[in-house]
Length: 361
Image (tube, rainbow, N blue to C red; front, side, top):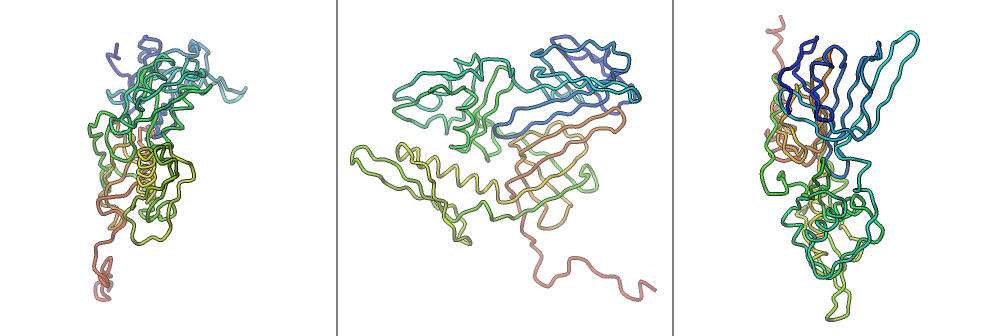
């Protein structure tokens, strides 16, 4: 069930709220003050915050774990569960009710410790078994899911803890949304199924409000990497190498943890290479509301200046809308590309032309 109409009530953006299957768009039109939705790549869950004018105390307080859906401009920007509700107020300033929600049910079995082991299976099979124990489904990136090991175990760890740990190890994004989890390969701009996530345009003079970007940062980048693993047939430790393609850097990335076999060592090195590419630059932009922006998708900046214009990977998306202030989208960006970090103008060519004395009068 989706909202059939959108309220005005001073808002300049269309919105909709469905709580526990009930469309509250019309009922909350006079009282909803603002909406904030945040989606982060990696381990963090999606989150949502709704602020309600509770001056007369007539709004029924939502119960925890209630399903919540939020829409902006006809697009669903959040689906999750109420985590907590906070009431605040004072004698002179009235009362507010803040509803805070997460992208998954924090009271569910995803945080329950599990104990089992699997022999001779791949990462997809292991994560699927974990997800079944948590009562949810999962989609695993085909490349990462094909990683084979002769022994996997869950020794008192929860699905959440194991998913986050493996995501850090193999350069993945692990998230739970509602009753579905994803384990995707980070940095490729693709969904776990291999579909492109799209491009969000940020154009100066049109929808780009402000930006703060460092297009080059070598602190997390290395020239190459090395990882140790144990070779069972020869009963000896061996080492794998991977060129990260940064010939202008000197430092090597030496993986401290021991890999189970050569394939795992190669996967870990590939993850460290992708991490370095991701951390090669960073920044943030604020746009007019862009409901199509998604984490791990791309943002293309145009018109900021040479060396800044280009494509970036979206790490965080935050939609903010309020009754009095319109609506914006803030993006945290990583992994510059498409010319970002390179000022293509020739040496000695002025960045701009100064007016002549004659022009100045």
